[in-house]
Image (cartoon, rainbow, N blue to C red; front, top):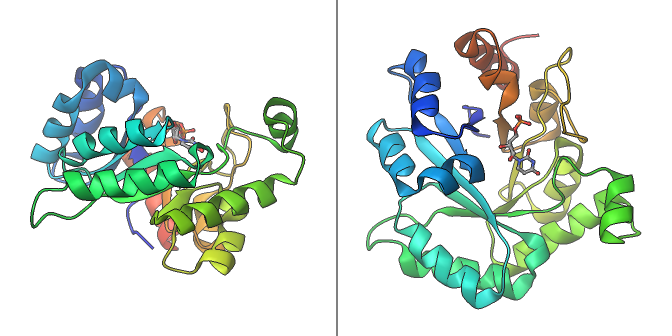
Length: 238
Ligand SMILES: O=c1ccn([C@@H]2O[C@H](COP(=O)(O)O)[C@@H](O)[C@H]2O)c(=O)[nH]1
């Protein structure tokens, strides 16, 4: 279990991300750079975060034909991020090519980024999955299926909700990463998230890492909110 919650830096510009990070001066954080920040600002963002010694999850959720994803991963590996992902719905061949691309792009002596596969987004409900994707099995079964395919392809773990983390641990093992967004505090609003849990539940059920965005970034005091989430996640607070 990773001690630091991963903070989702969902901002449009580096200036806004930097302004958010300023009060954390001196703390080495684990941050997530998603489409909003990366697609508008590019590798510059990664350089800035690495300069400040933050660990980085590059959450681009690649989903394309195997060759395209493999080649893209080869290039992205050179950025030196710690973790990266694809959509499991892209299939086993695509995920295998992602692993190979990452390996090929990792600098000699460097560490290949951890590769995760997104199962069902935490904003997806059982009803939406059936209506939008025409998947008729229970959502948990779909998530578990994607996790098993990700493991077969050589991924290091998955992105799932806390609600499926226990079943994935039983099926894929303790060491297989269960990285869980959809984290909300007990009295907080869910926003667009559908499968949510609080940091203490994530610890009890067995998430490897939690990803937290708005409950921290939109809080009146983001540093206090971060430390509150961290204490709940670490079991040092009620
Ligand atoms: O299934 C998924 C996969 C990724 N995410 C990302 O995590 C954060 C969550 O932000 P909140 O503000 O805490 O809801 C966000 O960047 C998503 O892109 C996810 O939520 N669910």
